[in-house]
Length: 241
Image (cartoon, rainbow, N blue to C red):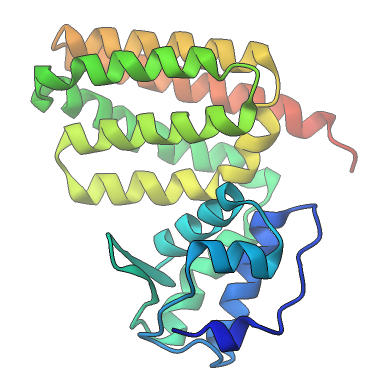
């Protein structure tokens, strides 16, 4: 356990908490204060150390896990991965250079990957899981007025579709792109209209999967990605330069 390495850390400012925490933990790894194989303190301890909420902490840990910096062992804690520094910095460099000008390319990739995931989910998905997907839609409806909570449910929904597609490579690619687009989605998902449109898109995707129609599922997902891109670009344009 490396609680002593974190004991002198300052609390984080309130803006961009997730990004700041990602950068702070990565800094500890690259300077050697956290070494490969080290276990991070408990979630409670980390939240207290940085004076942040547990949902914000979990978001940062998920991002670092996707980037390969951390390894989450179910029931066993969070550890610094065994990757070399050069391996860690390559995906992070891409993550940090992502700008609004690349959002179109990001969603071009997401259309291809998420579209195929939806098609495979319709083809391979176990019908037993359909009530779970429908329950996710209900949960999304209850979170319309809570964008942060909605994003969590939305992420879980897309992750579940990837699991139903039964292709680990596509699932990992989709998860990575999802993390890369997190900041963009935070901007675009603040309005109830955008969330409502996304929920309706999700209904169409689930209906196609339920109907075992891969082509319809792919088309519904592509339409969903187009809607997300359009709303994100509009939100980015409205932001102060």
